[in-house]
View 1 (cartoon, rainbow, N blue to C red):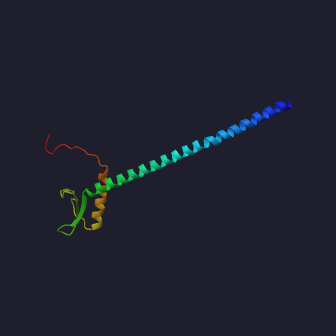
View 2 (cartoon, rainbow, N blue to C red):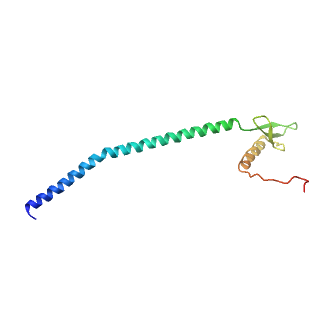
View 3 (cartoon, helix red, strand yellow):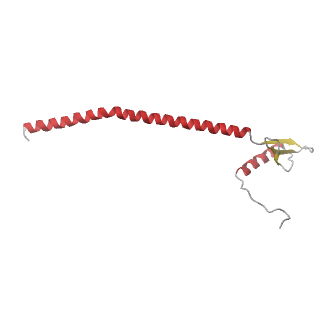
Length: 130
């Protein structure tokens, strides 16, 4: 290759390199804008998740405030019993038996809570009806 051709090739390579670097430099602000937009989207998504969590918590507290409650009491014979009472004071369920120890009565309540949480509804025929 002649000296002049080498000079032209060198100039072309140098020019391409300079142009490539220049184009990268020009693209960096755009890339920075993209990073800024992505950061803004992440921040917005985090705020939306937190707002949703607060709404769910408020709803759970509202449901809890209006939920039925278990009452533990002693019957006439000294045994412990429980009843499930609605907010309107209506009795929804009872233990059906007395327990000698209060801890046994409380264990019965926990058993009902676990069993009833996912219990299916089963329709039964009326007794004495054919």
